[in-house]
Each structure stands twice: as structure tokens, then as C-alpha cells.
Length: 100
Image (cartoon, rainbow, N blue to C red; front, top):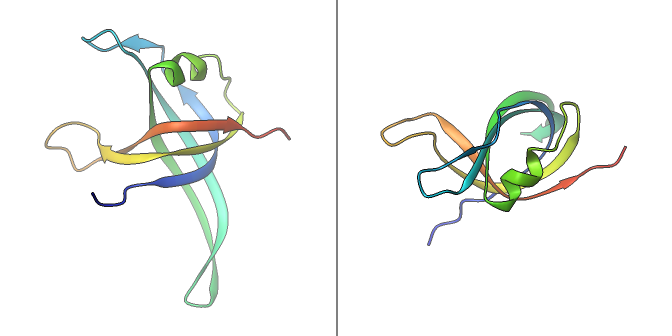
């Protein structure tokens, strides 16, 4: 099996309404913003991005209670948004609220 793991600190920008898959699994889509400085080739690089995120199961139910502006540690794997799509989404397998 190949490695596919992403960890990111990000701020919730918006979230969709909780919905259910045809199999009855809770699913929640959301958009997060990340900003940081990273070192690349010995130089500092400012990173600003938005990332689409998908929560499923009990994580979706918990994430449905989050309000925009909350900062989270997110961890999960990347997958195509849909079959035959080149657009990626982070499927969250764990998250933690960062208390400020």
C-alpha cells in the first residue's frame, strides 16, 4: 500500500449542510483556509490556500456543529472529488479543535 496522508492546520471558511449517502452514512463537505511560511530550497515561502474537505460518519456529525472561524488540526487522505475527476478533496479521518 502506498502512503497517502495529509496533516494540516486550517480555519473553517464554510460548511455545507449535513447530508446522507445512499448507504445512510452522514457526509459533510467544507472549505478550509490554510496560511503558513515554509522553507523551500533554503528560502522562506509564504503559503496561502483553500482546500475542500469531506467528513464522513461520526466525524461528519461532529463537524456539523463547528462554526466558521474555528481553527482545526486536520488529518486524512487525498482522493478525487468524483470518479474521473482530477480535482482533489481531503477526506478527514481525524480532527482536533485548536484552542486560541
